[in-house]
Length: 402
Image (cartoon, rainbow, N blue to C red; front, side, top):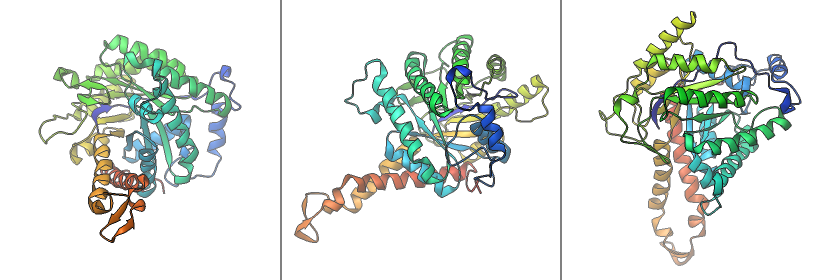
């Protein structure tokens, strides 16, 4: 898991009416009205939330349900169809939603490390291919799935531009974006530049009903090309005033949906107990500050997300959820689980994996059914899914659909 808390912030009176220039067959408002009269797919969720990929109003409704009912959705980094399927398999088992998360490097891996990556071509094509895979099979698992992308720093914005172009094209044909949400991590820039760039992208995202997740403060550690191992520790803790500033600025964008990664000591990777000083009280303080500024009666006016949760104590996780955390990112622990499943498979069948022919059952016995790549990969999927079921339990995300 990862250790940086992101606060999912959504502007008041969020609307989902897309710009007519995108040629949607139905306006988002019409779709929302139609959804309100539809039969519910899940007893514990709004009618707008259906099995398969969730975007726009349905995504907002799903996140509100998580906040109101006190659970957080696992947001899992993936690297291929195997880990994607493990996510959805786990969600079907624990009875809750799942966020499938593509990193820039993960997208490139899906396209193939030997593919031409000039101008991020492979990073873009791989993430799009993965998203289309999810859209083809997600409904078969019977759970809501959020298609998300992870940390994108300033130098990587062309990657997001490519994914946004794909969503714009998808929106023209289907009335919804290809991806549900994107994260921009401009925390290395000044607060003003960070939010200024985010606001520019929010204006683009809002036209096609994409949610923006942004980061304030820095998630420590290293993950998938983003290395903050040596960052000043003071930058690991976001101040409520910074979150309020971002909220004000992004709320000026019509139809905006946005989230904020407000760090509270979070660090990517896994560390021995005592090596990470999490302060989830920052989230509670931020809620109180925003509530006062808004003059709101809502004790949790903002949605938070938790980055860098590997090794976090169940107490810290649950305390963060009470502050409005509705998603926690998971990567390090699921990477280990996938590998550990493969390792255990090799250990169990070691003597059948040393040659194509010949094993303890006889010198002429074939071993094909053991070295078939699907066997070891399936063991990895099963182990990853089991670890995600454990994570869902920590996040109170079990049996939250029906």
